[in-house]
Image (tube, rainbow, N blue to C red; front, side, top):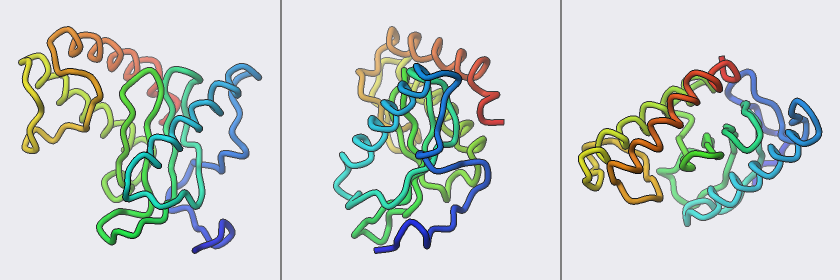
Length: 163
């Protein structure tokens, strides 16, 4: 197992979660709660044996946050660095290899969820060729509209936290 001090973070502009702070004490507490959500989410996958280190990429408490985790996995096909997205949106993960910066991760998340919205508007389950992230709600036109509204807010209001 690699120790924390042996880690070289492969992206700029992220910092250890121990240094994470929000705009005020309440925001910091909300972000810490989101960190716990992100940890539980990634650890819910059988391929995540353990979290080695955790980094904060940005966000707004209770709304949306991105974390970068270095993980141990017994599977060779799993990237050891994973972006984790949590908040008032469906959680998701994305291998660092698919998004080399926090802004690329943010954009990739938005694009993936927009694909899910398009499929859900048709009222059908996403297929592998749709390249949609898993979303833990039924793909209905009503859910699509709810998520689309949240995506617009993320794009307009939260984007500056990742630029």
